Image 1 (cartoon, rainbow, N blue to C red):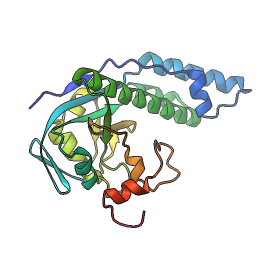
Image 2 (cartoon, rainbow, N blue to C red):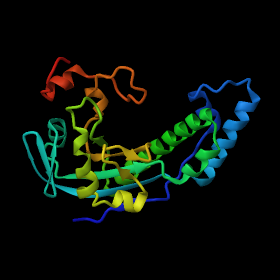
Image 3 (cartoon, one colour):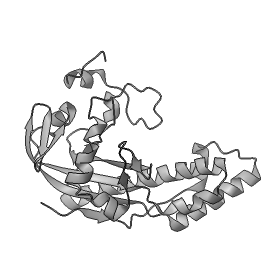
Image 4 (cartoon, rainbow, N blue to C red):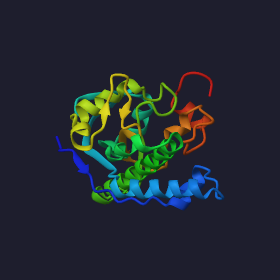
Length: 235
């Protein structure tokens, strides 16, 4: 069993002007713009996005189950994506806990801005994690899945503890500060966990998700893929 690898010096860039467009900051309001730029500087000064991952061996793929180092992951879609592969990477990435010290001094609008900045930190942490795994293991293309992503039966959120307590050995909390609550939420909220694996084609669970107005959608719903995976219900 391999040791988890911690990435705790992830470089990032918060482009105040570019991100301002994303939060629809009024360009003519000098006071708001100054508050925004101050917040971006403060977050840039203290933020430390992080990630942790483990190189895991796939023992078997049977029906709707992928057995990873003795841990059964129950997902028909995951089983279909893994196929004959014998390796996957369990991971957790986060915006980090450091920016929590800013919250008490912020107005309501500024707290909304902070969440957007944290989302950018998380996305950059995930992108860095992908690059690091591709580089280290010489994998041209990665795809991934996360419990609770996509429609509910794609990979149920109830599978989340298997990642945290077994495949990552509880180290996501110990090493990068991410806590899994009893209701299966991750704290900080801008955190993500799942598995990554080598892929021949691009794949995202968004392709198996019916939520049309999801702000984080990365790919349109794919009827053919839905049917290919034998999903229940009407596509």
